Amino acid sequence: MTQTAIRIGTRDSKLALWQAETVSNLLQQAGYTTTLVPVKSEGDINLTTPLYEMGVQGIFTRSLDIALLNNQIDIAVHSMKDVPTQLPNGIVQAAVLERGNNKDLLVLHPDKTNITQALLQQPDAEFNITIATSSIRRQAQWRNRYPGTTFENLRGNVITRLEKLKNSNWDAAIFAAAGLERVGLRPTTAIEIDWMLPAPAQGAIMMVTRENDAQSLNACLPLNDDTTALCTKLEKDFLRTLMGGCTTPISALAQIQNNQIHFAGSLLSVDGLQKIAIEKQLPIEQAAQLGVIAANEILQNGGKAIVDAMNNGK
Image (cartoon, rainbow, N blue to C red; front, side, top):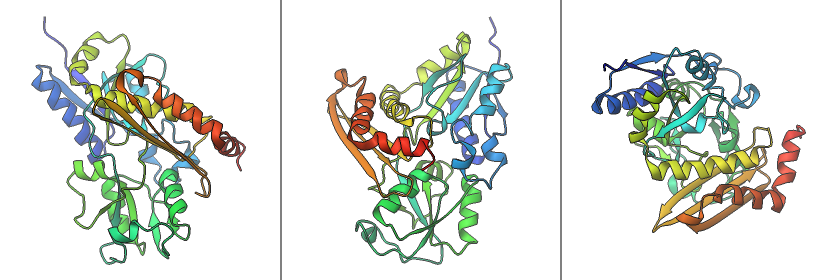
């Protein structure tokens, strides 16, 4: 029986296309025929409004979800950190590829070299600089460490953002390392921000499909990386438990070492003045609820007040 081509939906940025082509190549190696279907997302069309004003949840995935449910595509490929913690009815996670670099990256303006890795290791250093990022998670963590920094909104795909930085009077901008590395655009002068916790599932690529699409589910299943799938699930559980219906600076990273899950998470106020962090470690076989457990501990230790203030617009 001849199989029909699997239609892979993707945003049309260079990074999104790289991710979709990676999935396409893996499926072709397994004997499937594939075709790419670029779809514009709301987050790609509006490049001026800060993400927190647009309602981040689903802003980069909603158009692909609709295309899936309308049977215009068979698989959607996402940066997993952009995917809401609750998938729409009828759509399921099909696979998660092995994770790439989970770090955040400080990209310096080509003409400005006053920031060094050594300086970044000094909390409360006097930074009279301007940094561009649309991520309130990155802003809050940076403000917590360096409260004097000025921030500018920066939207667009990685190429657009690099160009905006180059043509600006900003000192630097913050990017996800994986995104720049995947398209071969990581500057040699960029600095990994080792102390900054990433967004939940940062660096992971996720495929989703319709829950009743057996061919696509069976095609994707062998591509799933069990370690990445487990770690990102715990991080997303942490995010979902803390969210409270608001856009809050939440970070999480789960890693496996010697059959142990090492989990680190944090919740901050938008201004960075309040921060509650947690680190926990459990054997893999006992860690299924680790993200939820860590989030509940944060809520009990002052996090609920931060979430409530966010929900009340304070």
